[in-house]
Image (tube, rainbow, N blue to C red):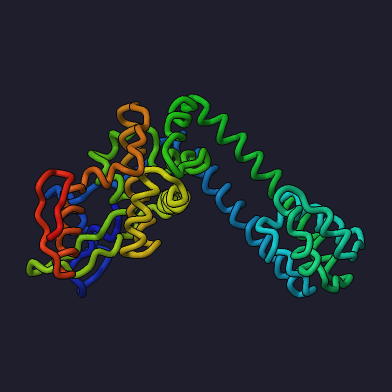
Length: 331
């Protein structure tokens, strides 16, 4: 049995290897030890691939930041106009800079898409002085990014082949707001496709570490800080939650409501928990995702909203008489 070492700490002091072994044996004899989650060999292979791909994507982002730093050092403010340096416009301008082109007007005319309308801003941002060592740095960084792109593509293909048997499941889960295929592959690699390992969604959320903590004494809640869990799955869920916050959906409305009261970080944690519960249910039951809509929370809390509005009107010196369910008369 593989057990988390934090779950069997003995009383401090008088610690030796022999006493530790006796304490562990005593706990096991009384059934006080819980076996840790050990994934299958197939799941471990997917997990290794997805984790390595995440590292490569992070390294690619760091290289893009270094490119931005080189441009800033050359007084070229391209990132202030172009949101994605590795987009079509960004790469075209970078290639022209490496070729020795320094005319801001010519470089600005390389813009594509919506950036075509920003010729003046581009020309102002491209008035810099790119020296020889800046060109050498940009060339090397772009080559490293190209190498990483090829590696990431190979990992994408390898992961897709290993999860080919779950394509129908991935396609069904992809309907959940905020979740992308990469995030789903990470969740399958971390939690697996057999949800029987977790008694319910609450246990899965606790294992990931995306649910409120439980620290209470004397009937007083001391802390609700989340516990340390699986950071790979938690990161994927937080990313999905932030993406859902920009949509006009049930999860997007939940994100905006919580964010207005408690901030974006707590909103992302709460919505990430909701996404995990949806993921758990869909994998376990095989049911499709049903979008509830932005009005769901309002419809559920109609009476609560009505009472709150009546209180606000009464605080302003009004007397509110509710005659019908949706009709109010003010006197």
